[in-house]
Amino acid sequence: MNEEEIQQVGMQLESHREQMEGLRQQEELIRNLNNEYMRARDTLLNMMKRSPDEEMLVPIGGNYFIFARVDKPEKAIGSVGMNIAAEESTEKAVERLDKRIAELSDAGTKLAQSMQELDGKIMALTDQLQKEYAKQME
Picture 1 (tube, rainbow, N blue to C red):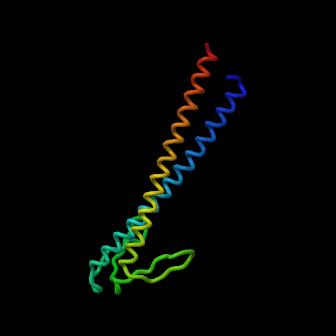
Picture 2: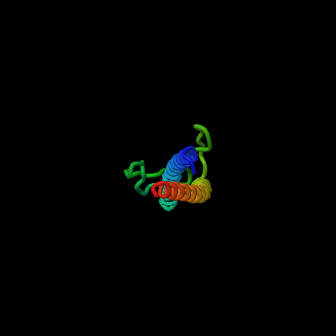
Picture 3: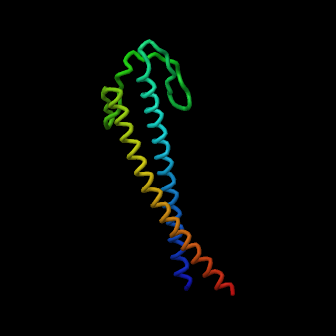
């Protein structure tokens, strides 16, 4: 392997490492969204068990909760698109969240596969460069 080929492999390795960092950021985003959806789902399911005059803890974000009474536990308002929210039954809201959670799970699985493939490429290129450097040191 000549110097130019070594540089090309090095640049390819760096490119793969940058791609891996991007995939890790996507993985973190998926994990955060999944946690948010699961928390919302759990809150809705908990709300459905309550009577209107019963107090419950409601998460408000940042691991903070407030005590609240829900006047209409059978209704929820959720996002249906770009800055559009609509009232729907709590059951429908839970179904919508279940669908989003399943979609995130699928995306996470595909992302993990991509990361595994990319990791294999990174390891192969790293090994190739190490062997070439070792050969040149002889």
